Image (cartoon, rainbow, N blue to C red; front, side, top):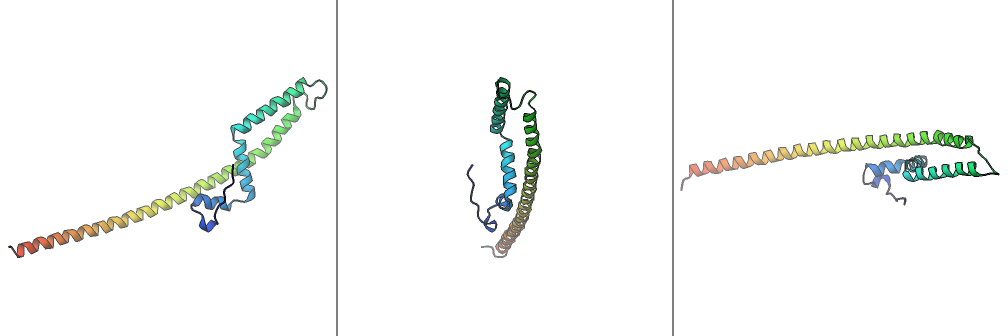
Length: 147
């Protein structure tokens, strides 16, 4: 995945770019790790490595570095889970923050649109009243000066 260059925060086009630009290196790393661990590629590669590990330890006649019941493999999985869970939770918390910011931006957009629609409605009503007044004046003038 190519890393995009982003403009300065002041020049960011939308809330998502602003949020992305405020993330620290650790936050980016946590998101990358969470995205990687939540992919089919990770599951497939890990499954292949586990099958290979178990096969080499079951078939290997001379050099068993982790004999059945694969205690070292279980230790590796426990360590992976111990680090993966908090990293994924950090990423989910950031996603929640992004959702909250997006909801606030959507609310503000809806509020601005409502105010603009109300202003347009008032303007249309005043134009309508002006036109009706003009038509009434024209009709009155026609009554006053019959041809």
